[in-house]
Length: 180
Image (tube, rainbow, N blue to C red; front, side, top):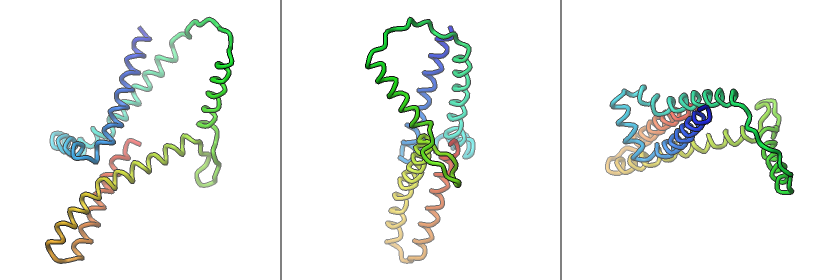
């Protein structure tokens, strides 16, 4: 029974994680904007954004806690020891090296403290996500402003409109960072 519950929870965690990653990639597209607009129209602006970006992370944390609770109380499986071969030795050594890469400090700095490789990967991937989302949202709007302003004179209005649009897009990107 406990194994079945762990399997169901693990499957839910995997499905929710994959759907959240897919949603983050679809967010700057027209499909993502359409879905976000529909949700915010039905639930309101703040509730819709909260439901789309923050609730999945909270559900993942809850499911992860439940999974850890079930794992902690389950008895260890009874496995007969087998003879160690050279491939087992290689696998154990590679596993140990991989673990060391993610847990040992890469650099120690007074400003950042102790940084492991997993911390660096998380920071770099978050920055890439932020820059990509800003670019994907801002460039079509800037082209639209250019197309509209070419028909009407006034370069100052064009700069002001692009700056205002950049501020709006930075606000949208900051909402994506809420669950992180």
